[in-house]
Amino acid sequence: MNDPSPEKTVKYCDYVDEMEYCMRRVFEAVREHQGVQVERMKRYYDVGVKPKKFAANDIVLYYYPRRYSGRTPKWSRVYSGIYRVE
Image (tube, rainbow, N blue to C red; front, side, top):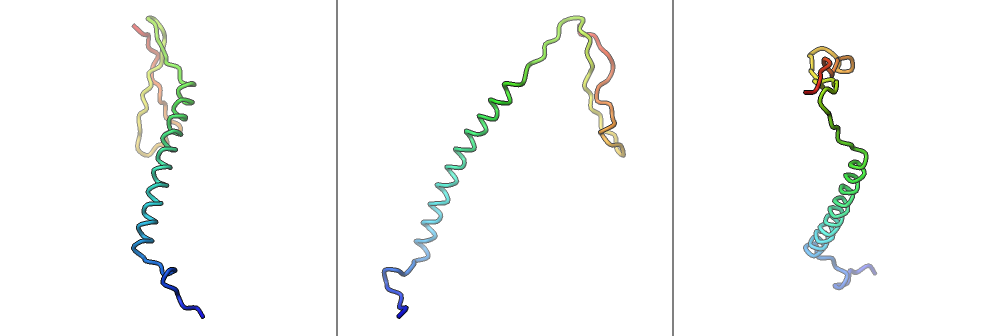
């Protein structure tokens, strides 16, 4: 009644080769889609970033994030002094 016919017998080597081929195709498709998505995210990020330009005699703060052991960085000062651009 449930005799496996020779046409329906699964050869494991063929199955493994087919699965490997399918997985490689899917991996390449994901890699291409991910590259497009990274470019899109970079473009959206770059729209909001504006370069800072300083002129002579501008007053600025110096960004200097120091890490102290035993202290949380939440309360530490990351800017030092008031400096004038020359």
